[in-house]
Image (cartoon, rainbow, N blue to C red; front, top):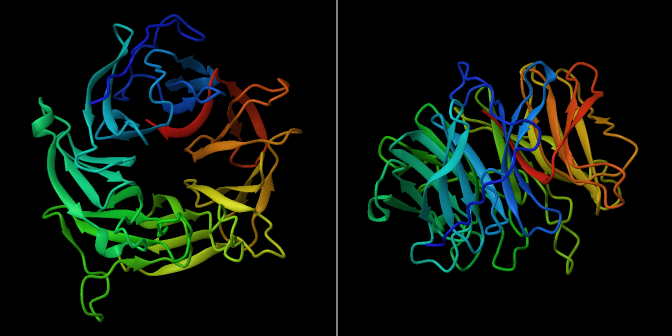
Length: 388
């Protein structure tokens, strides 16, 4: 099990965390995973945006290893996932009254695999959680309340039957849950990491941890095939999963499938899928390779796309319309780490400009008119944004 270097450091903007309110974490309402520009250091940053105060609390548990992290906020608790080469899950404790942010525990999720590379964690309770492992065929069921490493792993769920790769690795990504069903996103990549087949979603009954047959008219237990390839993330909104897929964007040998992604939808009850936004083809790809999606309370669909290296854009498909429009982030070109729509705003994580003309941070977008309200500046470049 790898050790984390926990470094105590000064707060970025203020001396102490705000007074607690009804949130499990006090007035803090956003958590951001971030990496230094040289990717040598990672951080979990907490932000209070109430009344646009924008209090930023960072470098409390930043660490040089791992630099590649993800975060999850589940069952009222915040977790950090150390990805490729670090293969760990850590629980982060935040005490707003005593101004302490610390790591309660860290558990390995490597098991017997060469790499686990955890992608997401979803907890149903303090004692039952699921970890998607992109480097393995096994989804893990774990107990976050375990007091020993030996008691952490509860069960393994083998998903190799749904792999496109001959190695049996299904390349798990995001997790979502609704009405007793866990939805596991599979990218569908092969052993060469080419998007040679459509992505899938596996459904698991969390009362028994058994696979759900999503097509009873076909022999065997079926996964749900999506109309896109290389799906990397999804979000649940009003019983519908919105799936972002980048297509075969990184295959330099064969570019014919570069634009086989887009935004797909999956009804979490009927399992019906549809292609909501097509990313185009080699002759016309207006959004580039789509990388992320989020949905606002009024059903507007926001998504990011990489038009070219270092030139990412944000688009919105307004409810009741059929054509997305661009949201202009500024006069620069941007690398986008993530985007998140809340009840109040759209947050877009942008990297700092290499020429120093603009710091990295969160662009805050007005949901009504799509204009930039302000930039919440961060020391590190944001890679993931969560609402708490």
